[in-house]
Length: 407
Image 1 (spheres, rainbow, N blue to C red):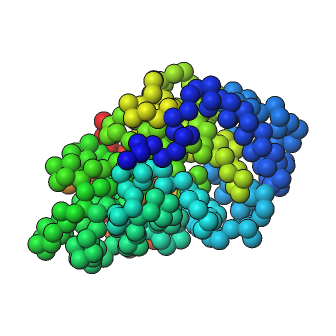
Image 2 (spheres, rainbow, N blue to C red; image 1 turned 30 degrees about the vertical axis):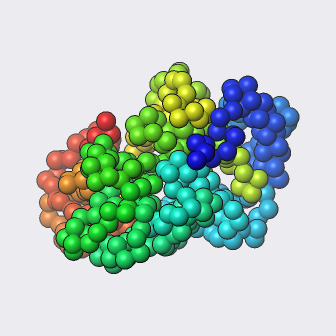
């Protein structure tokens, strides 16, 4: 059985640098064919951009900018060289932000990650990522096709049906958010269903907490995580538990000081900035808002690309709860909608291996059921609302406080 997905994963440093020098000018030249980049990269000579150091001279592109660009030039903000008509799908993420996709091949490059999980021909993957508006479900489905696996397009929710289907079909692998697998397994236990054939898990869309990984290991499930976004596809992925995430071959990653484009020192935490080497949608220096750091050396698995230390939080206060982004702008929208609410603050924590979100508001006299219904509409998540005395919430500038431990 081959150990690596392809030859790209084991290139020497010199080979990788030479490949970067060859492909970056073409990517920049293609980007300049998009109206948005024709403006922001005006005067840039593609032949001059041949390394990560050369990239650092180009402007950062932030998610908030994409949202504004798309509002002005719908639906993709002028970032696609061939326009929106060249894509098979257009998805929507919170913001809203719209992302394109193609049905051809492994467009989001998830197959490389699934291969690292040991998933391939003969496996049946229960794909519990959403197929509704967001690209996550199709990202993993096209990746499964690339490695020859069969997919059960389950999506999230309807847990009893999920558990019964997994048992009846003989599912061997799970794809989805880290904590939903536990929900399915627990329901199967309650129903007396045999899911012992499920021995592989490829997770993303949230943090894989050590206690959760340990529980899956005790059940005989080999669980690895990837780091992916709707805009960029797969960015990095595990091959060995807790040994860092190897950067995908279809992107270039920089770690910069949050709020700037300046590289941080080796091993220091900074914001993840990604250049997508994709002719269809060549995002240049896209700031993810996520914090991470580079690990020294190469992986014991033999793959030679740089490794990320994993998710270290957000460069801003945006966080993920149950696989969904929760943003400060949404908290501000909530306050604007309710004249009686003067302040609001979200507290994110973990209870029983599940994400929990509490929305604290001021002042005390509030119709809590109505506020909870409004919060569910805005955040697309259920949350408990608590009313607090005037001045009770901390005056520290935070509107989202994440109490979860990532160690």
